[in-house]
Image 1 (cartoon, helix red, strand yellow):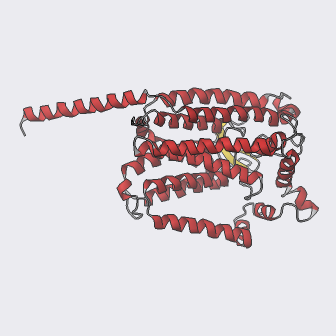
Image 2: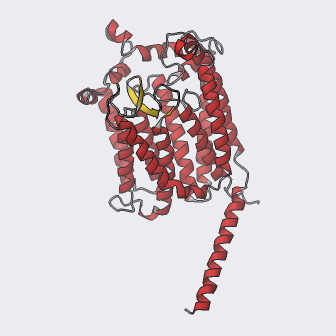
Image 3: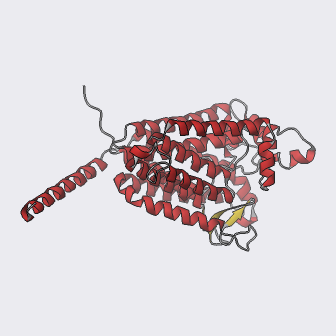
Length: 421
């Protein structure tokens, strides 16, 4: 090839690249998916109202919080504004640019999780991590409200990294033992989930495993590995439900095995058991039953006045059932279901595999987290300490959830319009 031919070929490639960038820029200016946005905003609005109702007795009774009944609500409101601004900015970005953040995101997540579990001299046996209720899951400045939960950052990091990696190596995803296949992703997923489990944060580890598994299934992992994973989960469930093997294993590693005992029979045992290990679950079920069909009325819950622990966190949906009843709780679950279904619809119609996998990761996280939280509150599964998206108190979680909504909206801008006729 002559020098002139090489220059001409280079110019053609540069022109083609500029054309692709321009097309991508124009596509990124398309309309966002309004049904998905409206469903998310409705859940956010209802969640903020229920947080205010569930949290004000606790805040008002706490001298540490200045006896301010709006303390939790105001903090959550500030994070919601921050999250909405971030959601808007992210929704305007061409999602293809997120590819370049994949490695940075996963390494940042790894380092943050590592900082949480470094042993040290504080009361939780950690060097840097801050703790609450026996678990050290936060990083921040001790004695201040400036703290965040690295596992929430890790969820988003895993979604972007897996989407980029799987979309690039799809043809090798059905090969487990290959450097470009599913094997390294399985190892990475196990490592990240294991670090979260050490905190301890079992629900976070379950979410990370579930998100990664769903993205690999969509990405083309071989069906036999899927069948093996489903069989393993089913066997673990049967062992937990019908034998004492799982409980004995948890006791041997000094983990809270009483949660399984409570799950099997929260109203059994002696008085010490009912007032101790089973108290949370018993009060949750009593709270749900108190609401009946139509509820006692918004803001009129009795259980939030010192009876139900964690009423503004993991067990806020019990307050929803008490105040809004079975009808109101069902309508909120319907909103979640519609958001999840719309998310998967957008994933099916995304412009490319990378965008589809991004939406699958975000939607699977919301679906799993919602199901697990409601299942814990109703004692369908043992308590795992998992929050409800858009409802439970937690600034980091809410802000990142809204950023993830922005990612979905960014992908939705480039969904091809349906052909006429």
